[in-house]
Length: 472
Image (tube, rainbow, N blue to C red):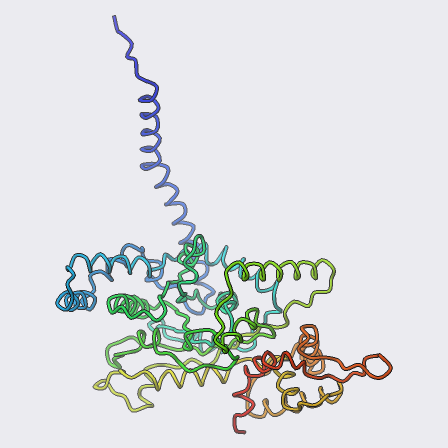
C-alpha cells in the first residue's frame, strides 16, 4: 500500500516557484528574446532601405562583446600597466575599474525603441514646442558616400533640445549616437539614452584610465562606422555666439589618423538655431558667474512653463516658440582635408586644433538665419525707436546683405514680410521689444528696446553675428 508523501506548504510553494522560473528561463524568455530580436532585425532591414547611412553591424553588436573588446584592448592594458608601475594599486583593481568605466560608457542600441518610440516621441515634443523646419541638406552628397566611411555630424550647441531636434530631423538619414553628460544619468532617462545608442561622458575628467577607456570606445565606434553626433564647443553657448572648439571627443576620433591605413571619416557640419531657446535666461546668467538654481526652483519653473503653454493651447492664444531650423552642410572628408593641408601617410594627424577650427567655421556658415535673430540684430544696431515700416525695411536690407554673401535665411512661407512679423511678434510677446504709447494713450507703433532685456536681445542677435560681420 502506497503511503502519501506530505510536504510542508512552504516547500511546495518553493518547488512551484522553481518550476515556473525554470520554465521562464528555458522556454518563455528565449521565445520573447527571439521574437524581439526578429522584430528588431525586421525594423533594421526596413529602415536600411530608406536611410542614406545604413545602420552598421557594430551599432547592433551585443553590449557585452563591446565591453570585453574594450577591457582587453592593447592600449587600455598598456595604460593599466603604466598606472600599476606608478601608483600603489594592483592590476586586478585597475581592470575592475576598466570594466566599470566600460559599462558606464557603452550603449545598448535598440532599433525598435529608436525608430518607433523615440522618433514618435521626438516628433511630438518638437512640434508641440516649435515650428520645426529642415532648412537645407546636401542629400545627394550624403547618399553618395562610400559605405566604408565613418560619418560624424558636428554641430553647434544652442539648447538641450538639440538632441531631440537633430534626432528627429536626422531620422530619415541615419541613427545618431550622442555623447551625453552626467546630468542625464538618472533613472529612467539613463536606460532610454543607452537604448537609443547614446553614451555617457564625464566632462572634464582628469582620470587617465577613464579617458583611455572613453577614447578606446569612441575610436572603436568610429572604426565600426557608427554615425556619431559631436558638439565641438563642448557645452551650451552662454552668450549665443558660436564658441571656441574643445578637442575632447573630436580629438579621440581623429588623433593619430593614418591616411594609408584608417577608414575615411566624413564630417557633416550641422547648424541649429531657434527663435526661442528654452534655457536662454539660465544660460545668459552664467556669464555673470551665477550658479545653477536649486533643483526645486528649476522644477517649479518648468511646471510654470508647461502650465502656461497648456493654457495658451486651450485658449488658442499659443504661438509656440517660433521656429527651430536645422541646416546640413557639405560633407568634409578627413583624408581629403589632410591632403589639402599638407599631411601624408608619414605624418599622422596629432594636432587636431586646426581641423577643429576649420569645422567650427564650417558649422558657422550653415547656422540658420531666423526671424528673431534678424529683428534683434536690427533693433540693437539702430538703438532708436522704429516704426513697423522702418523696422521691416531695415530687416529686408539685412536679408539682402546676408543672401549676397551666400548665407541661407529661413523665410517662413517664402514671405519676407510675414517672417519679420513673426520675429517682431515673438520679441513683443516676451517683452524684449516694447511698443511706445503716444500722447493719445494709444499705441504709436514705435518699437523700442526693453532696457531690462538688452542682454537677452544680444543673445539672439549673437547667433548670426559672425555672418553679419563677415566680409562680402
